[in-house]
Image (cartoon, rainbow over all chains, first blue to last red; front, top):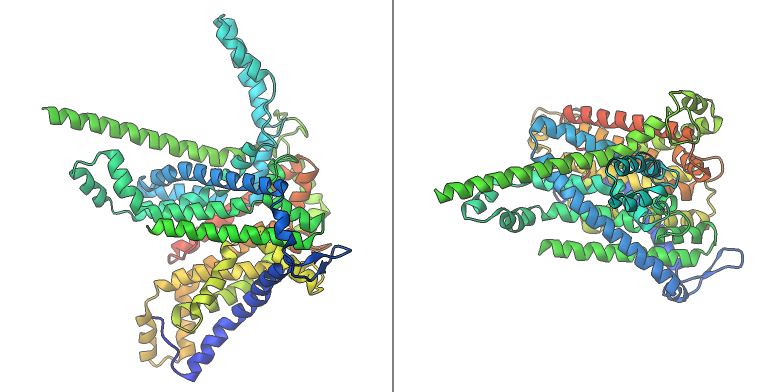
Length: 304
Length: 276
């Protein structure tokens, strides 16, 4: 279908078709990208502006233990989120793919609705649940505590003491790394399930039957046949979860409180409060580089 | 005899695994929907502060409709989403046609440029655009938000339309030309109607991404150009209130409506709304 433009007329048509997007992407994407790279070698001006320079100072500052620790934590949170999404999402995709067709469509629509819902709202929903006076704690210190109190009355043994103790005080959930991970998993789970579902749905089940005819047990046929054949979905889903988790800003800002921050919050504060554009640019560039390298390695692994 | 027993045991284990899978599936959907359901339920709660149920009320919805700031934010959101959807749908469709129909030098590089806005973290893109606007002395406002939304939406529209074009049967165009349709007529009467579900799917995705975007809008907005997500964010920062629950529930309703519209589009000819 794709053909070399033969006549001059076709060349003009090709130019007509691509030039608006080319213009937009060069001016409002490629040039800003180069600007960020250039500024990351600059210096902070007296009033928060930029002094052009060629210094590696901003990148050196990144190796300050303070920032390295935040970056390390960001990587750990993003990786944990990706692994949890995979462990939850892959069986969920398998579940959907093995339902009868009528059910399958309904289940897919139910998956699309959160996927199309505002991310801010979905994060806010967890704020309602996890904050100190939130829904989880209301349940924890209310009905759950009452149940244990009743049990202690009905069966007077010492074993209820620790449970009563635990449920008498609210849990600290808000402001922890765990809260951020829950928020991120909730936000990006559909992005893991959809590509995994597409891969499982494409799977030729006769190959699995062939493996089982050759006396492979369930585990072996899963590891040797199903998993390799659906690897493309796993790779795509993991990238779709890992990249936004690495650059997360909203989730740590709303659920992490003041204590738990990620690299996205550092970038934000460099631009919005500290007004240190060169340092903010350097961190953004490191973030993009890590993301790009990570994606490439993952694709390479996926192909092998 | 023994083989039969082994097979029986295997079948029993299989049933057990199947039940585990079903339980996991049900738990997964509860995880996805429980927070949303709680949010919606508490938007009707009469108590302002407590997490306990104090009776049914529509007060929070009423105060939402009376709120001038929210009305202004809604207007801005619709202007931004409308403008950026129209521009990015036209440009994205054009570029999709070019990428599927022609081979040219530097196509690979252009392909990479087209995919980058999709995979780059939104905070990085937000920073890039903010610096660009600040350094070029462009005053921030609705225009800069629209420009930024078009910059990421072109790529999404192009991906969706290209998916549709990949299944396009070229012989239909050849048939039209055999019947003496000129190139414009062929495009207008054959190509465009056939790829229309893809174009509408892309437009719907662009519209959704635009009304949902927070981070890039946050960085490229100026005074007086607050959109709904920015408004929600500043409300959340000031504390949890039932008005936010009401506003969130309304936006949830809009997202559900958009999903159903996209499904109808898909039924009308199998357009590609899945961006997987």
